[in-house]
Amino acid sequence: MAKARTGAFYLTEQVVLTAQNTPVQGTISLASYIDVAGKQGIAIEQVDFMFQGIDANGAYTNSVYNINTANATFATGAQVTDVNRGTTIVSAADRALIGSASLVSDNDNGLSHESDLYPDNYGPVSSDEARIVVNDQLFFTAETGSDFAGTNDMAVTVRLKCRIVKLSERDFMAIAITSSAADN
Image (cartoon, rainbow, N blue to C red; front, side, top):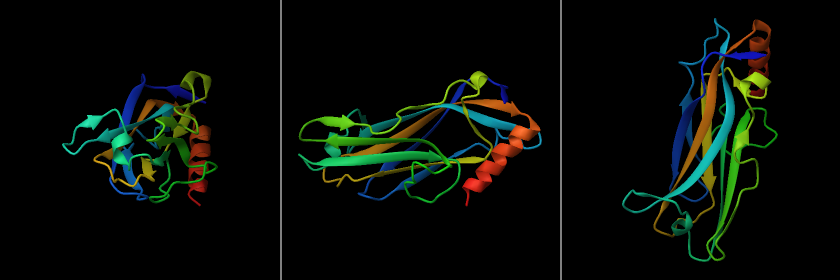
C-alpha cells in the first residue's frame, strides 16, 4: 500500500491541564509533510502518551499525586484525531481517532491504571500496519477530573513515531475519502 520515503521520526505535542473537567486541545501541523500532488502522506507507527506534574515553580515532576486533593481518585484521558471534533473526548469507535490513553490515579492507595491501548502500536509501514494520514493537521485533546486542589498542574504529552510515505493514487484517494467521511 505505502512505501516509506523517510526513516522514522517523532512528532510531539503537549497540553497543560489547569482546571477540572476542562478539555485542552493542541495541534500538530503536518502541512510540510503532506503532498497531495505527489500522493504523499504520513504513516503513524506508534503513539505514546506521558503524564507529568508541573509544580508551582514550573518544574516538571514524575508524579501526578500533588495535583488533586489528598486521598482522592481522578481520571485523565487523552486522544489524537485527524479530524477536529472540537475540545471533547470522542468515542473509541470514531473513525478519526488515531490513539488514546487514560490514566486513573488514586492518591490514597497509590494506584494508577491505563484502560486502553497505551501506547497505540500499529506496526511498520513495510507490513502495511501503520495508520496513514493525509490531513494537514492532527488534534490532541486531554481532560482530567482532578480537582486541582493540590499544588501542581498536569502536563500531558503525545509522541508519535512517523514516516513520510508515498501512496498509489488509488490508495491516496481511498484514505482521503475515508478521512472526509469521518468528518461527518
